[in-house]
Length: 138
Image (cartoon, rainbow, N blue to C red):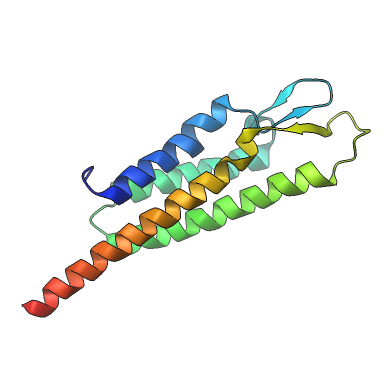
């Protein structure tokens, strides 16, 4: 159901985790090359799981409780991913070849995804409360 606001939030989350991450580098290395998420298998798996959860959540619009739980799991995955990005950028020394020399905007895209998922969960909760209040009237 595209007319629901949580579906719009989830589609934007899909665009961020599934599309933009291919084009926006996470950071630049000392040698000037851009580092994309595909160059590390852990990042690829976590972003793939996040994208898959977002798609499943969009498809399961009739099951609001399952959608809510999947969004929570997706928030946790994005927090783990953000933690790994920050850990990698802060712990590498500046003398190694793979050291982070300049952070890219791609490193902060999971924050935007988390905000969109929280907004989607608020809208799902509002829908669920509305359905429960209508059921009480019957």
